[in-house]
Image 1: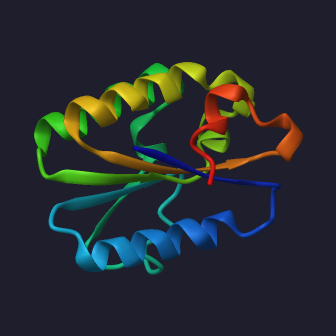
Image 2 (image 1 turned 90 degrees about the vertical axis):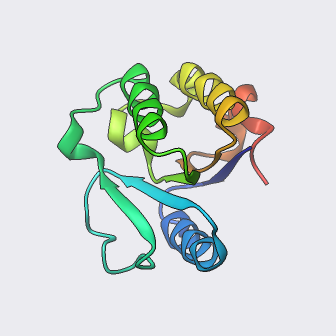
Length: 136
């Protein structure tokens, strides 16, 4: 399953995803991972959440992110939920360019029984069709 928290920049998406992750982690049976482009959320996240500072891993493309996630899953079969905050800032791209990433996450979710929650910024009229089905 993929869930996208979508809205204009500055509307509190990070606050929502952090709250969602913290609530989920309290009841999770497996590992919860939070991928961000810095480690600034370290003190905001529940102690059971594994914060990954993506800037430490030189992730520059959609393929890099998908490979990184597959590597984490290969090393730890207990990952059940992955949060990604601000993937467009991480890759310095527009949301409309992320079809490969979302398609890949859909396959990973199905094959490895892992859920994704992602924040994405943009105006409602700019929402690409391949993401629309994941937005609440």
